[in-house]
Length: 357
Image (tube, rainbow, N blue to C red; front, side):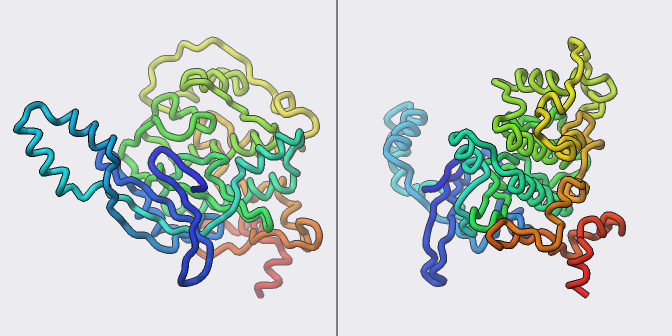
């Protein structure tokens, strides 16, 4: 086993037909919850999204303890006992969905933890690479209307040989439909956008962009930016840094919100949060995604086009030891559909355009 979560367990396995290592995510099909993961994974094909090779279902008998609990819950008399015992003999057990995925050996979470334990920061080149690829992958996901809803370091896979990043775990993902309400209690706490804490059910893919900002800030700081102990405390942590949201900002997050009684707290300057050693361009990126009004946040491609990532666009730039950077500029026509020419020119360096002619 290489990972687990609320609904799934991930195993490392060997595909005997190709002799390649794969990851198999085993997900319990609980009828109480909608499972959209398979349908969404079939839609996704991008260099910065983990690739699903295959999927299959299997039945597995419940363990004895679980069967006993269910019998105790349901058996009220001897007649019921007889009926339930017969049912248990015919019960096919629990149904599991198995997603066969490309195996990627590490995560941003583990890499960050290793550096923190060694008393050092992740090299800034790697921070830029992870931030850029995360935003690019999300831009492609958002392009087809899908919101991930659980971006966090644990859900960002990294090949430490190439530093290629792939977004994984679409168990909370959903295709957002205008006018269709969504649950607001979603996304891991430290990375949860403020509109969710204000109870919005009509949010947008901008909640993922907020999460990206939280992840990047954590990589720069070496610790979570908003380490709340609860949902309310999470909002307090955000207000400590961003200041008290105005009435207009609150309504931009949730037009139906009616409580505006918050103590007035002044916003901190980002340079005071991160210190002088962090590049001003990095602070500009953070300042353009960690804002209350969702429509004022960068989208994924605007994020990638920022000058903080110009270093990645330099011809001949490498990881060191002549190791090339992972693929960063192989944008498809679908990715760039509807993108204006000036943004395209920023995203694809001139030397790449020359090679593609």
